[in-house]
Image (cartoon, rainbow, N blue to C red; front, side):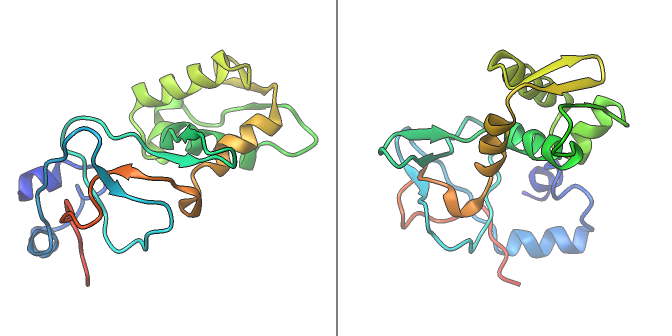
Length: 168
């Protein structure tokens, strides 16, 4: 399990002793399609490491519909809003896209997909390292989706063991 944990970017710089401590609190679990992992409003008592497959993360909108959260797109949206003064619509990245992806804790290919998604939705326009915000309100809504208080159900039964947890 230590090698699996070490392969996760979040845990890759931990020492062998620190990884050993994490493994003492870690549990493996397998989810079936449709199971809930956690629900909106649950206390954040553990963290989860997805080894394979996919999980749909969403929150419920006021009309009861699901609003899927794309944690990479939200981080990019938040970054752009922080960097862009309210009176401006455009900015030039001061770092390479790969470096920015790393700072946002996402892979370069995921960063590219998030940029494309925002461009396809008409939220931003991109030419090289030049970003123009076309819809600041939509960008702000996407950035706000990352708030943990707004997270909706994630699939898994409520009494299921955690994938990994650290109580220290």
